[in-house]
Image (cartoon, rainbow, N blue to C red; front, side, top):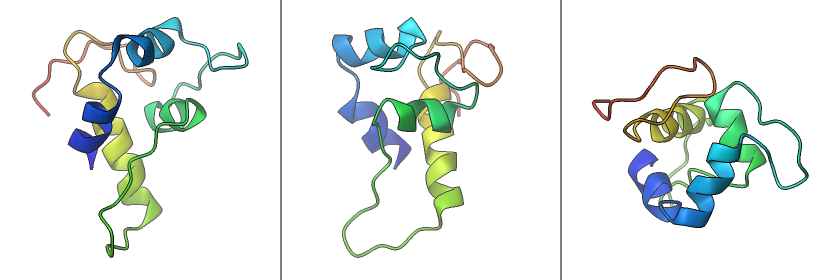
Length: 84
């Protein structure tokens, strides 16, 4: 799920939106990566016919945010290293 989310939003426009730290209404993005991605409208969709608990979806969103090399995670400010 995380890989699909990253692939879907690997474009320059989406990455600029995330790097700006603001949502489409100009509000600061939340500190939690999963909530920041949801605020941007990026969802970790499950494959058709698969039911997944929301906690698992949030984990996938956190992983997607932190897996991009050199990108700070909103929750921690640490630099991601792509090893997750």
